[in-house]
Image 1 (spheres, rainbow, N blue to C red):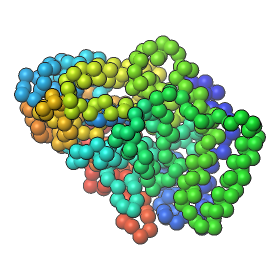
Image 2 (cartoon, rainbow, N blue to C red; image 1 turned 60 degrees about the vertical axis):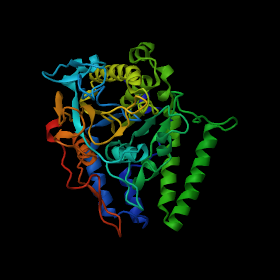
Image 3 (cartoon, rainbow, N blue to C red; image 1 turned 30 degrees about the vertical axis):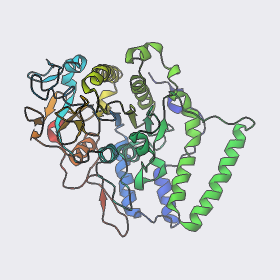
Image 4 (cartoon, rainbow, N blue to C red; image 1 turned 180 degrees about the vertical axis):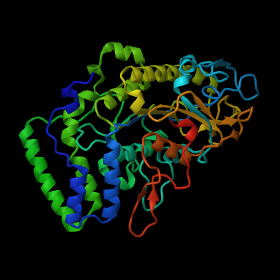
Length: 440
């Protein structure tokens, strides 16, 4: 159970209600990039949705796992590799033999075997599969977590609405992607709070010699000067910086919730010792205590250009265990019905092996899975041909996937953002249809 102290997080609440903020901006003539009417319509929709308490946990398998060794095995074929398949709780449906736990709970999952996208380079594919569409200069489409933070987060919640948990090593492509503009045109208020492999937030305590009252007074002065600057110049960038600064007090009060050492040892043992497993546990804990979307990324281990079979033999059993434990944990706590769990990477792997016995990037035909809020359990949607080269039934691109995600969470995927002087931007392009077969 979540205690009142955990829910409140302590500290002082300096956050403004979104509606009051927008009305104040309009009165002061500060709404410039978006139309006030458009923003207020979105605000009303968000207020209706936030009563539902929907959340999202994205297990991002960075580097891209092989569909042949996980959700769409092709045993005994020229492309299937050395591993067999096993029956699942769904009659006639088989998963890769290294996923026995997911096979037993297949009746909780919705698996899409017919994903087909275009980018085959990590940076571009991650950008596409986390935003739903590529950026349209000069504006950047917000990442999924930022949209969910804007649409679903409670106005009075102290916990950061969007959290990224990632032990990403220096220098790989996902770290480079993180340096980009996550929240796009939504601004700094909806950017993620990022935490690495330390399993706790860093640099959120006051420096020596600075008392709490000193910090409050300094923040009041900073806010006054920033608001004056913003009023004189009508700077949206300044507004984004202000929103980020105003989250600091809340982060300071909620920092203990990011410390895995504060969680029961039995829970840590249940999930397993790896960073991916422990971050999955922490994600559940943060969602339970007020966050709206938590994205768990695991570095870049799935990029198996060398020794694909051997590396998947190490990684797939951990994924199998984490997904099984996570869904059981969410169900036991009464959270699964309101939490959408997404399990995916940026593309799939080639049906063939290269000279280094690895599988290369393959966006043409691949798989992902989901469960929880708004998702019809026990569904396998789409199919690939017998060798896995092409989608043979019910092709799904990133736009249909995002339309399905938003619909599952109760969000109208055709919503638009009105930016003066530019065509209307939609959460998803209007001609993209959700996959009704995987939705409740």
